[in-house]
Length: 500
Image 1 (cartoon, rainbow, N blue to C red):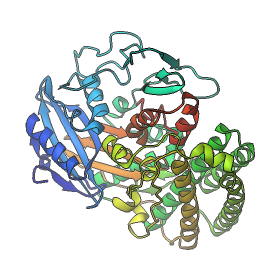
Image 2: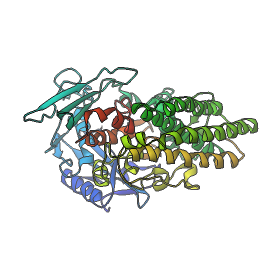
Image 3: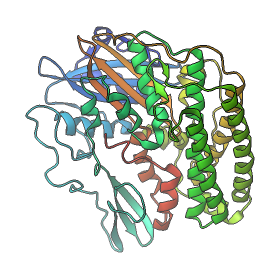
Image 4: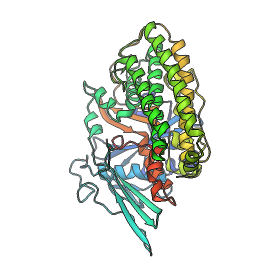
């Protein structure tokens, strides 16, 4: 820890205070921290005036409730962390693809998104069209390969899944994304500006509030302002409504994947009810234009609060009825139990976040470990299960739904009076801030580095899906390939949230 800068969630600090280590010392410091229970929240590169590449790593210490920052200046290569720290592997592949920085000794170095390099004059890492790269092959008799996607049936984002099977049993799954890369992080450089809030709200369409809050929190830290208490409560209400809508949608989809149509049908309607409550709050079903740096862009009156209370009671009552059908059906629980199981050790090694890691028994939730906004004063119990399978991931969602309902009732009863917006100052120059929010899918991490003029010299977004895609691949090992839709839905990861 002495080689790192300890900070709190959303605390802006001068960039000069962050230790910058030589590559081997950097590697050793990160490995020691991870071995002590920390996990990598963000790990990214940025060009330096010297022409070298600066690498910044943010580690989350959940038990201590702190983050630590450290940097590295590297030339063309550095000793890879991945052989000893699997949760670093995707970050290191991204560094190599974006900036040409090669992690020497990386066990499986290849493109993540097939995007052009961001380093001037850099050579593209991929040699062909998007998705064309070496895939791991399993050899032997009766081994065959199944390729799914990138174009899928139905309205699904594009992604390629390459299964190595023996009979019906999956021996290995490799997942390739990058088919809808938008270059958002590149576009954020030089901001904030008039388009920045739009970018944040559309990073992952189903996590509008989570990403918008992480951005607002980062900008408020850089601008030395805190959102008013009333705005903090409204933000929490929107975040929990986003959680309700998506958890209901996932539970309904899981029911549909095992052919249990009553719950599927009910949840489709109920998800709409939750989205409509967000629309009542701010005029948009996904919460767009609700959050602004410094507070919120709208307020509610007593009449609206009364309507929200009535709708919340109805949503809780109808959801309990719909989900009782599912939990009481042995044919459903028999399909959920034991499918796609992960151990807590594997989940921690891969750096999983959100319901996926809590379903393995981890007490890991940003609202509890790195509290922000109104969560610094009100605690929601962390929902966990210990089997790590589809049942656990579904059950954790249902427990979180119920606890969010209780919390929302408290918020609606305790909404303080006062303003909802306090304009932040100009972003502090030559500073760095890491902002964490517990979205419905897990930890949302935004990291901003400002230049001498207070503009974004680098802005890095880590959607929870970035951490969790390798977990889905590992969960399929030893499963029947027909379980893939069920396991996939139990994680329900974002494709566009990774293709930034």
